[in-house]
Length: 317
Image 1 (cartoon, rainbow, N blue to C red):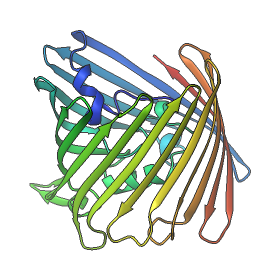
Image 2: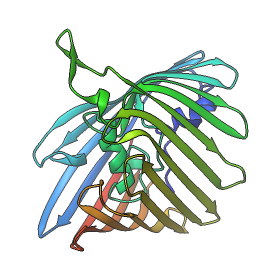
Image 3: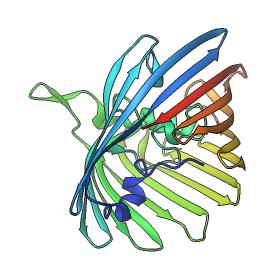
């Protein structure tokens, strides 16, 4: 299953990665989609360009998303350029990394980039976190985080612009929109045995509608060609929880098939979609080109199904 070192940097991998060779690098990927939905057919395109530079104990990063022709959730025909990440990661002392700026939300199983997501459709839990963080595009947060690599686990504590509403409202200071409140997040990542990855994420908030905290628990286990995942997201004031399970099988080197199911226990606070089923097959056409075929079924609270077929090309550079 695809993993994104950039997306997991805050939670775990930036601590050892900080010792990477010095110098600047540019990388990224193109995301080309063909989507068949309700009798409509459309091609979309998007690209991401990632800049990194390491000097001594400090890595500086910036990710730029360019969305063309309705890609990544924009209206068809809408073109946008967005800043996904802008951060520094400083290896302050041994096993301690300080990260500040704009970075991918460390809470949740799904990575931010399409390159590292397991299916051709973002999941219900990812979408809930994306909507909660309140930034213009993507499941990203702004703030300061400290990650400590304790060997058996990596513990990350972060002070963020408040998520789940509140401080993400359009407050203004000197004519500029700003966040005036903060959330505190705690993320613990552990791998107690080979192939088993556990994550517990907890975040506070000050929102009268949603309460004062939320938590996410997810697990991924890989043995041989098989990977299984599970996740649950709960918010104080909800009368339901979002949950998901997935299974992925490496048929042979460079080819993977999988299935994921996500739903909620009551559908009271999570919109119209109550269940989501994703069937997926990935195949590496070349070292820098992967194709995916996805069949996605979304069921609303009234039992109505929306079926979608997606062909996705991911080309890296």
